[in-house]
Length: 241
Image (cartoon, rainbow, N blue to C red):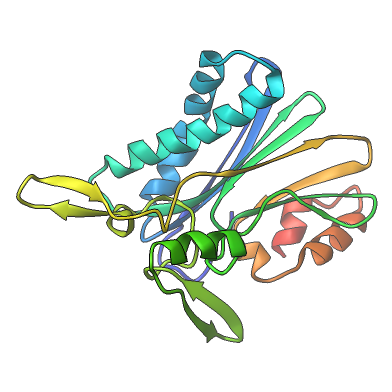
């Protein structure tokens, strides 16, 4: 974690070995409009996921993927019930034996590095990604596009991503007559995309980071730097540099 130019740190992470039997979990949460949603995710998402896993039966792979999806939806429910209006990207990776599962909603990213080219394990949920654009346009909403310091930015309702946890005011409106929050549409959703991978000896590094890294360097640059590490160098510190 390294704070950038913002007045406060809005990113959090979680790393917990053996959170449920022999399963290990790692996640990064990139908060916006405040740090409350990111903090909620870092403190509660592992417990939510453990509960969801324990409630399911059936084939291991399908049950774990479904548990990850339902965990994001439960985290969304808890975030929208809060008095604050913060939001957060969320990416969560679970290693279960030789299987890797990655659930992502937003613009954090995970890649696998090792022999050969880096392998993306998530999709950046930019509003212009075809599947995301299709959902947004189905709700008759317009995507705003412009450049900041040479970087193309696409936004929907002022948000630079089409999936996230929280952001109540972008997803619901407050009915003051009944003092209730009512959903607006399905432009911005919390549902994660799930990717799976059978791990082998050629997979050396799993890199999970917010766009604080990915807006600066490419997947290929990350893989090249990791490939040249010495035993004395810490991977995370070197990527931060």
